[in-house]
Length: 364
Length: 239
Image 1 (cartoon, chains in turn yellow, cyan):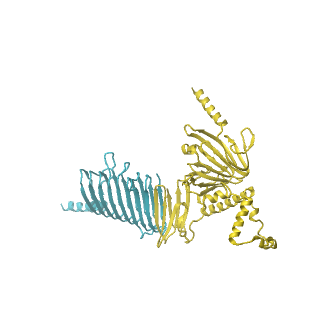
Image 2 (cartoon, each protein chain N blue to C red):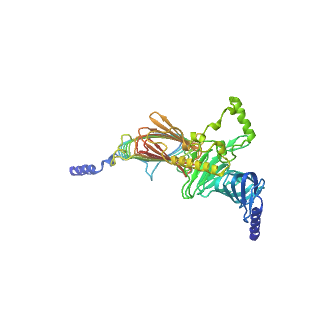
Image 3 (cartoon, one colour):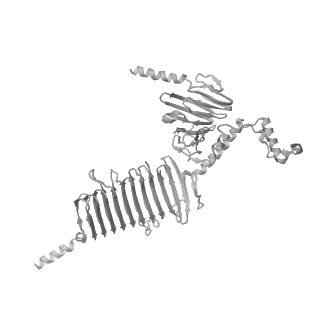
């Protein structure tokens, strides 16, 4: 009987190795898939995808739809490794492990995440993401440093919900549960930095990095559009002698015009990623510092879901958890350090006044 | 005869004054609608002990205590629904131990307890509901003084606990060798009902330690006001 069980498991496992687990839904530019036998195939529309495939893009981007409706989008110069995918559609059971090794990858949950979220394991070189049914993006740099951004999940009617993901390193975990919250893990031995709420929307992120670049107008459309605008403004381009102007002489800093920018060029996206990562790192570092410094208090909505208000002689501090509320009225005569801990992993330090004096620890 | 009178007088003088002034009260009562008021004035007064409690069993009880003096002790067990108590202490080094619903046969629903103490170095231990939910508990604790230790554990469905502390005259925050602050520990267990569990702190003065734990689900609420320096406050809400 035991032998029979083992054989059955082996058969199912081997079936899942060789069965198609999804297909390419979108390809722009070039990319390739390396199979387990070492064969390398160029990505094309509807190309089948199997467990243990390695998906690599060059100057191109692709999207893969898996059989459980999980969708993964991969941008330029990125690498995704499908470590394992097992799915039984009859019972909606299965497991999914993949690694975003480089570049930018967007993940949208499918059926497995809904029914077997504990079997979903999304990894980067430095972090492991626990999925609780939602969308998110991973940006992985050449050294493995990973930025993870939680995205809203929207249906075709435009109705959006925000799920929750956990981001683990070897030594810590944070929970992201607000749209466009982000965290970063530089090395596995460092804790994920405190979640930061990014001040931009999905369209910005999508246009910049993830989904699709701004639609490129073809030359005729572009020309017609420009002419239309010129008509409205009453301009006659023939009257403007651009050749009389030495643009480089006028502005030595103008080394590249808009027309020179190739939005699909890998270097451009690489630069954007690098710049975004630098911005995020700077933001994260500022988050680690004092939220309130030397009496110059920031009031209003603060990171971590905290509200701080100036109520004359008191500071009013309020933080609302999932089923709990803490609100404090703190005399301005004194100084406070408030350590806010969420779910045992995420901590924030708020300094009020000079930050000494009173120590307040809140765990929710 | 005269010699005997002198010896007796000397013996009486040798007895510590606390022996003469102390009152010991032990009560066991069963029945509903008890209304009991106790007033003790002096030192070393005892209402029950850890081994011989005041045990009051019955519904709709009103049990009030007023102790004035130092080194007084109360150890009481209350069983029954709808208990209203007003406890007042003036003095130092008093010890209070209250259990409400300490056995499986006892209930401790709808408790209203108002405790007021003025003095230093007191020890208060309140355990309401214990392992069973007290469906409704309102506990108001007012402490004026320093170096007291208050531990309250409430297992209830809609607990409203208010702690007001004033140790603003204490030197706890200004002198290393001065008075010590108070230590207040509140542990609210049990799932909140529609009203949830609420803890209100109103603290004036510094150098004290406050630990508040709310571990039931549904609408845990802490509302605190602090006006003092060098406080050490821990608020833990979990479910």
